[in-house]
Amino acid sequence: MDVPKRSLLQAGMFLLVCFPACGPGRGVREQVPGLVTEHAMVVSAHPLATEVGVAVLRDGGNAVDAAVAVHYALAVVLPWAGNIGGGGFMVMRSSDGTVRTLDFRETAPLAASRDMYVNDAGAVDTAMSQHGHRAAGVPGAVAGLHAAHDSLGTLPMQRLIQPAIDLAAQGFSLTALEASWLNGALPALRSYSTQNSTYDERAHWSVGDTIQLPELAATLARIRDNGPDEFYALTTADLIVAEMQRGAGLITKSDLVAYRPVWRAPVHSRYRGLDIHGVGPPSSGGVLLAQLLAAMEPMDVQGAGWQQVATVHRMVEAERRAYADRASYMGDPDRVCVPVAALVDSAYVHRRMSDFDPRRATPSAMVEAGVPVEHEETTHFSIVDAMGNAVSCTTTLNGRYGSHVVVGGAGFLLNNEMDDFSLAPGAPNAYGLVGGEANAIAPGKRMLSSMTPTIVTRDGALFMVLGTPGGSTIPTSVFQVLLNVVDHDMNMQSAVSAPRFHHQWLPDAIQQEAGAIAHSDSAVLARIGHRLVVRESIGQVDAICVLPDGRLEGGADPRGDDAAGGY
Ligand code: GLY
Image 1 (cartoon, rainbow, N blue to C red):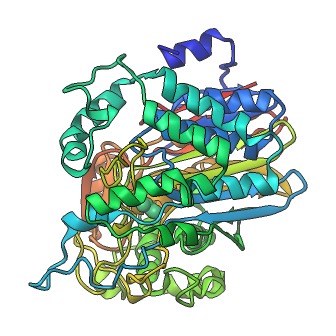
Image 2 (cartoon, rainbow, N blue to C red; image 1 turned 30 degrees about the vertical axis):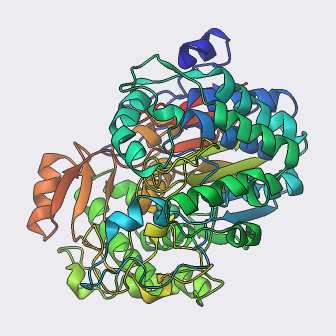
């Protein structure tokens, strides 16, 4: 377990082969080989979580069983985003073609109120919405995992949690990325948690250090023994409430007892003959992806070329309009009426693009509405089992290490998902963006998300499973990876590895990873009115593609510690 990637390779779990290039289009760089397996695959943000999921699949578990095990493992080995103190969304496709989506998004505590982050001077207090006890929404992860398992799982829950308990109890070795992020988070973890935890027992963590999480192991063992009631009504619930009382937080036992995950209708759309299955509100992801794809359908994207001026320009103009719609119309569908069918209707999207000018950018000031923002530290995993069932799951604490509050005596981090609400509708938030009334805070309401777990089918057969973290950049990352495969003929790994760009209406700028758009093309885009800024990496996509011969090709994002595994 010390050097996870090597141990997987030594175990012979990987069959690394280069899938032959199928004629990548204009502008496409050399294809990057991905893992190809015969039967089943897991791609997640951590090699140890991938290993746990593959072992479940080898034991005869299905994709949902593996998803539960991977999620619990990530709660241990990926503390900055994996969680039991957060929430997420899952898309499940059974081999008979049935698609189900599960919303286990957090909710606002019953004591939350619309202006709870607005101070006496009328300004939004983003420090409070992003850190500490009042930033936390009521967690949905444990309820969601157990709901998915109750409906579709086959192996006993105990078998699926045990690997996570073992990892927490025996310890695991920190990767360079984890050590560096943990060191960066230590001051905030110390400042916002009311009791010491294992995370801050050292002044400095180094790559290869073994970290043991005994309190988290004990919490997971209680969940193993008592089921989800443990988290929402029994000892763990009491520990959460005690933590809230010590830190002047809002979550009460009534909030925990009342929490329910919700099965919701998938958002379905089509693109070039493919069927795209995603999640609807309270995530904006499925709707945004459907809008973006519909906006590209009339264009010969392949002929225009990858990251070429015409392609980037149309993608950005589609993104600008879709994100403006997001702010106006989207929120918790149990509280506001979200016109999903109208928004994803291709005739509507084409009308929306009717003022698209291929020769110049449309200033965002001329596109109406506002947009809320999310933080970018989420995590995604994709799974296909040997029976052909698939799971696409995105889950989050919101910010890196969430609220930075470790529940005393329970050893897990709470989310800071309250910051995904519009903190003061109409007012600019920390990123200079504005949010809409539909996403205003209300007791018990779910905050708007951008998570975009997606399953793509072709002629009724599984074709792709994908998703990513990245806050507001999630839908555009999924969008680009889809176009990379469908229009630019990239293999899965190349499509994931390729540099990305993003536009979200406000700020009115194309954010790009270094080198994502060639210098000469950037100059042309600037001349037609776009502002371009270079930023840190965008997203961390983990994806699986079913090859024409039925084998599976993984795309594990090199931007993180992500790993594909299978057999
Ligand atoms: N917190 C990120 C999202 O829900 O989109």
